[in-house]
Length: 517
Image: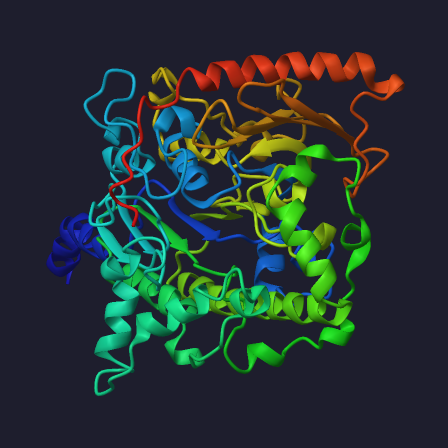
């Protein structure tokens, strides 16, 4: 008996080592970034819109930090996403519009890999994966992902996204295996309703069943990644939904979840921004708004917004499945979760829809960060932050100590806000920029309660607007040039002009449009 006990004592360390190989998680925490496309910042319960059913997103906000004043680096898909993935605003990384590539050289490097979030995470030992929308070209590039299930767009109207779509391939191999249905042709038909029928363009025909939709497909591919990952490494997962922009109409039962008669249009809908020259000269504020105001009644707007709500609730439901998988596998506590959108959507505000402007409905985003292992605070932060700051935050979490030394980086790290009750060093201002031509671009600066917007006009003086959120929370009254705002307006104008000039110097010399039709 003594001999058996002695053998057991000798072998105990070895037996414990064997068991730890099966149960021990990597020392570094896992990271999941969930991104919605074109989700307005206030369209979920935790941000005050209690009419939208988002229990899983709301629960995430209660378990983590909700950033109530988060903005995107550019209110359009690719430029915003590229900035989050590189820590560099669009002029510096080269992706100043959709379907153009990164700069071939950044700060003397031969390629972008030195800056890519995924490549830097891989250098820290992370196994990387993505499912859904990435929207980088060339689409066949891995962009630092070990696992990639792509759904940039299901149609071929603007580019060849459909030819590289793993989602379209899956549809053809499963639900439409024995069918002659032209899947891409149907998506193209719906997308081509613009501009003749804005209603049909926004809504779509809702021809897919829930099982055929890309939302459950994206979550299932994400869950596949979790199931089949390299378990000896921490993981980074980018779950990116193509929704909720057009087509808004979700499949049953989500298409009837909200009664249009219950939708409240709100004060932004009734504002016309007549004293906002940048809005009036834009394609959204000019022709589109006039067309919709003339052709639609309030009921039409409510039908569209009800459909938008339905798709958000569908996303929330399937996110719950992904989160439950993490909990069942014992991964939830050791995983950082970031929930955000690439940009917003007017979604009826000022009588219009879509994106691409510097008003909060377009440039402000939802942002929630849940920390791993209780390392961060819970609650709400009011500071002004930008989703470009997520780049530095995640690299800090991963243990990357060199990213701050990269010469082009414009990201900050949100960890001081996540881990402390307050911070006296946070610079409470954010910028955003959009436009492929520095002589005709649009940019903004939000500083404290004030926001200034600048529209460059080639061959003429730039145009400005100024909004005071303390007095005008729904951003309806342009006060630029008003006597009481002259001094602060000039001060903010000088700051924004200076920032824009620096960005103008970083634009690529020429753009490669070969990836776009």
